[in-house]
Image (tube, rainbow, N blue to C red; front, side):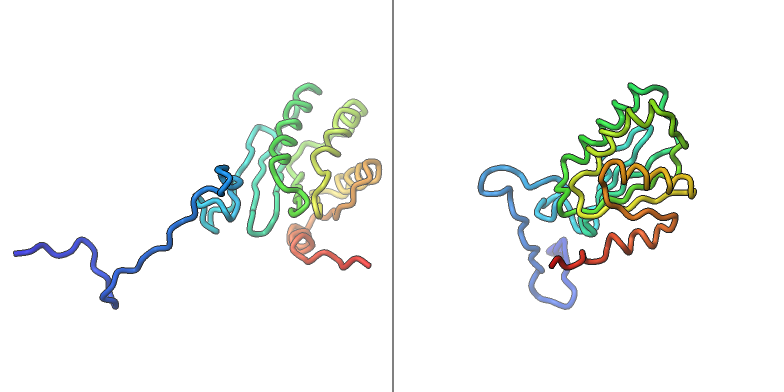
Length: 181
């Protein structure tokens, strides 16, 4: 007696053939990690955590073209640590095509701090972290936080929307850019 086939196809007499995934580009280089051209990832897996440390979590949603940076509640212990952790953040963001992506900064959990040493240490790091993104939105918890972020934006020459309403900010980032004249 013959054994039944290992697979039975319901509703069809021919097996369903899955399309072959494309190999690496003709140049021999693999497509960018997590990009739609990367055969290792499906559309549902295009949301990737690209950085996690004690102070920041960075998640990239390639479908929405959105980078979400979340500040944790962990305080910085020194100005050197601020520089080190912010440089890690900048390095993670530098791997992205910023021109095509929006940046969502959630700083609600970050401990409030505005001493002169902190302000000076973070100014160039702030600019390096956010430069080049198509749109920037900042989620704050308090009106004092909104005032500080507004002042930083003015000093740094950065345009962004500030709010304590996450849905408002995500709608802003998802909207098509205004037409240029």
